Length: 401
Image 1 (cartoon, rainbow, N blue to C red):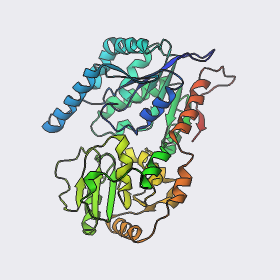
Image 2: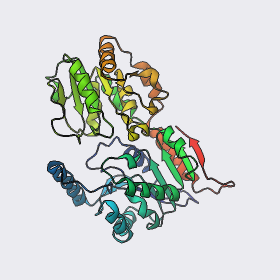
Image 3: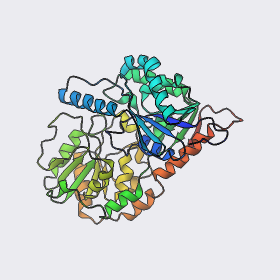
Image 4: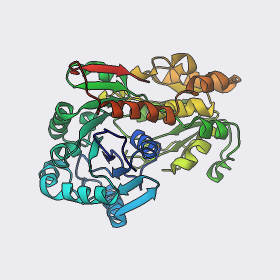
């Protein structure tokens, strides 16, 4: 694809925070990059990782190494018009950052050239991509700050904090999804923009209206059903709260869809069912199979700085939502039930299950929160990076969505 006349970049290299071949494709960078690829060629570089897998959990270690090798074996893939995916050979941590100076950048430059990108805009989500800001000849650098990676428990906070500081200093634009984090870092970056997570409204609403059918795995699970869809991880999810709630509601069936990094057998309750990871295309149907959807978050630094994608997906599906409190609920609290502690949470679930639910108000609210609209706003912001400016931009902030 040709860049617009006078534009300083002709394509985007995105150092992603996830692996295209493994993770749920509802993530911010996946959704945005596929849409930006309709305007510029995009090379999506699968996550470089923020830590080496640990040998403490042999099963998890083997799983992570195995999926990384499978991803590497795919090489560079032209997924769809304008959108390319590559899995480079890289090593996480400080060693990986040093290797980036001579081994990683050439791999990416070669792949970008094959995708038709000569003057890239470098978009970095994974902090391990920090070293690449000086090695790819990027016309502009954009930092995706939709997660507080330094709060990721398996990462080295010293290394990741240093990488993030470098990115903030080098970036021409920093993209936030959570306003509290953006406010916290105002003045420490050249330019900010707030783009909250989007949702494929039509897909999730259709599922909620019964047009996708019920997943066969749930056929034998009686109602009422309460669902949680997402990563079951210690830095976001509150396992003890969940166990306490499910134990108080023994007549309710709970099901969980998503990968788990918790210890095996962490929840032995007979009314809790685990279905593992599902492709993005199937997620909406699982949400729709519940009579209530929950978000039992903990109070971690990660949650305080995040904007969970599933909030808008839950609302678009049209099921009642019970959640712990978190900052990104601002503007949405009237559409969900907020509860603190297992007694209040269980009582809230019981209450919403007993009441009729009207999905219309929530769907009306999310109707303008589409990924297409988020990508349009971001495209405008990226184009503006090439425009001459008459005033200093330090600390400039935009609240686009």
